[in-house]
Length: 274
Image (cartoon, rainbow, N blue to C red):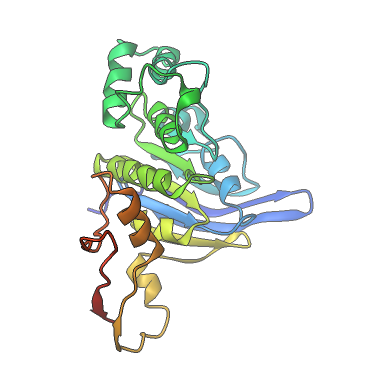
């Protein structure tokens, strides 16, 4: 028996006056997976997320989220999701722990303090929990924002360009957080304009261009759309990511495999066949 998709979108259209933003969007998202909606600025990514999260009504088409129709049962959809926008929505006057406690209280959950402490531990923020959020780095603030979104254990989370404006180290921290979400069974719909982000995170990638999905598949399937590369024996030079991680040090949580370091601190290039 094939499980019903966690998110199902069929023929979604949306226009703002004379500008048609979405032109019949179709895709499915498997439960417990990371689905990346990849597209440039203005492609319609945020508009689609706003429709799926019931903040905006579509002009045509249908969509279900956690088996609920977004137009017919918006209340049930909202209880099943969490939405993290492009900018961290944390109260900078409050500490990290106080932000979490506040959201838990607003959701009328029992023992908000225990919930806050558990999330601080899950997102490696325990030591910073008593500090004001205004003192947090960009990566820490984004991790806190995502932690706040998980209060109440929503089965589906929408992340709308979660690493916009972050430095490379902070971006890697957020990537690790998103991977942990999927590993725990949460369904993640991620919008991004960064090719590397989709490549690193997504189980499936849909390319949204001028309001429609032009390709949808796994990374392997998408790569097969191009002719096979010519195989040559080449010496691979270190990438900027290799250099960056070698200089700043690994946090211990990354999944990337770095080159061996030489005793003098430089990165030893690897030889690979391509």
